[in-house]
Image 1 (cartoon, rainbow, N blue to C red):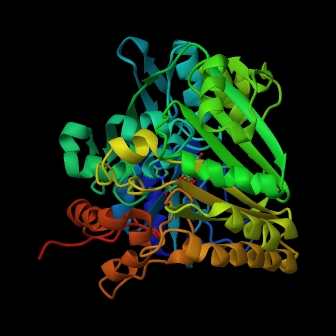
Image 2: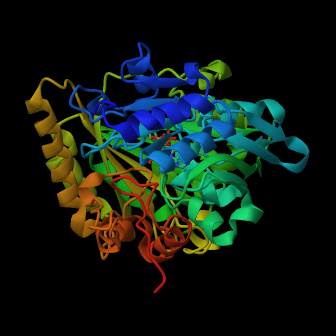
Length: 507
Ligand code: FDA
């Protein structure tokens, strides 16, 4: 849509009065497309058919965020908030339906201020996980943050969706480690934890992005880790013994309780990689592996000992070089060649050796463009922290999360997209009896519009019933509380997208 109507023109005029012109891009600005695609991660949503924003505000100050909300409310133009642009359905910069909206891009708001003495950091939402890891690692060799495995993911979206990663068995999700936050609410007012109150502070730590306002910065609790951690990558070609190893692996998350040890499994085609991060030395790791997981056959020769920040660079930059420059984590360059579709599941009962053989034979072996990434739960994330402590509910009894990924090239080739959809939907359908049910759980950070989309009622507000369809899969028993908080802080539903929390109003 173009900026045709008077409300849109008035919106831009309102912004122009308050925000420097070089931070505003309308569709006719020469830099519009390059700013729009600067952090787009999925080529599916960078086509001419994509419903694009009428304008982009690249806020460089919190006051600009407040101004954008204020102008948007006043002139009836909605904002889509973007931190790192990794949303799997592109909801931070595109709309599924034809509508006029603006993107509020936070990439310029990206300071990381570490206080090593009190093991905490304030980080702005537009920073990436790589920038956070780098700043923490530079500040102290024994401090860390339990984040995810991709350096360009934005802190804003990651924490808004809970945020899972290789250290959650020891320290919980990313959002479990948020101590304070600053949010611009639907009235354009900046609030910290004390001012927003505990209900809203609970909701923004995992209740999904966009719904409650614009979180501009977060105070994080940093974790204390040993000076030396150990990383091991074990590659296996899929065969009967790999199925047996996977069957053993999936029982490890909960029993025994080994929070310092995380082994992530990535299965693609006939290749299975077990990625191990151990918060301790190689010799300690080997004695644990010998006792609990001898089937993987890990030996001291497989170990790479290094500092935590170096381990993160090694893992998130997918490097084979233990001396990979840490500065690689600061790159924000995106690669827009891939067309990607993701789905997710949670496993509560082991799939077992025969199950893994069928997954491989009937699905993975058929095409390499299908991947399963599996993150073990248990430990602190699964047993110490209550299911209702934050909106992330997939804790007690969860063995692991599965992320399904399929990818293809290119847009013009409709057949490739259809074939990829067939692959991922076929596997997702096959997995149904093997994964959680009633509801079939899903992870909000692995956004999937196939599981449901909001409907807007005649009053212009998202209906609670339409939100429940997808919302109870992401949030289970926490969904109703999220909707109640939304009803209090944004009853008119200004902040919304196709999967935002609907307001549940007190009657
Ligand atoms: P983006 O800017 O697209 O925002 C995502 C959503 O949050 C949108 O709805 C947006 O409007 C909203 N939002 C963003 N900033 C906000 C703010 N400041 N205030 C309010 N709302 C805001 N996840 C994970 O948990 N562990 C992992 O290891 C990984 N790994 C991973 C790898 C790769 C390659 C990708 C593409 C994605 C992941 N993810 C992940 C998923 C990722 O955490 C998820 O997509 C996040 O929402 C991305 O955050 P961004 O800020 O980058 O997204």
